[in-house]
Image (tube, rainbow over all chains, first blue to last red):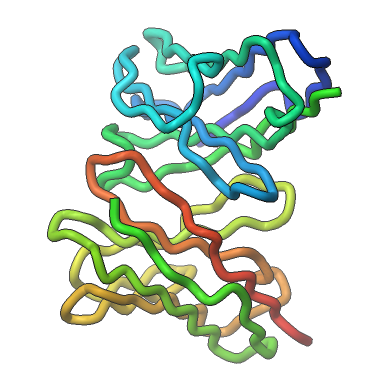
Length: 116
Length: 108
């Protein structure tokens, strides 16, 4: 079974631009969560989607948004990029939803976003 | 979500058992304990999870105390490839909070 796939792996953008990252979950998984990982803040939860609806949200500004499609694939968008948005963005999928329940999350290898 | 406390770093000799502790004193009744590890430049890898009972799989064993306020992840025969940051997290139907984890260094 294929794992979680995130594209692109690396991305370089400049301040003020916007970016869209893509995540394809494991087949059959309906929950997709997004995380931001930085050296200073560690792994922080962004949001979780289940059946095309955002069900949980972390403490990030409205510049960070996402969506999920009917095939469970998900995208996250960051607008008006800032230097502090440089990070590894991770996507995780699970069978069930609601953040983390009795079903473990399986992570992709992330998209490393660098803002110049 | 309950918070977890882990030692920032640990060393383990290759071939020996690695015992990684985690405190989660504010865990609630329906929250599971999960362990993940992250090797540099990769996404976190799921290891094991449990609610009340001890659990074992091909990778590790999870020992949860009777009061559920702490747990220990055991890697029975650590190898160099087990060098990673290990995260203990607790959660139920809530958003997930990762702590800072334990950096395990397996020494030849």
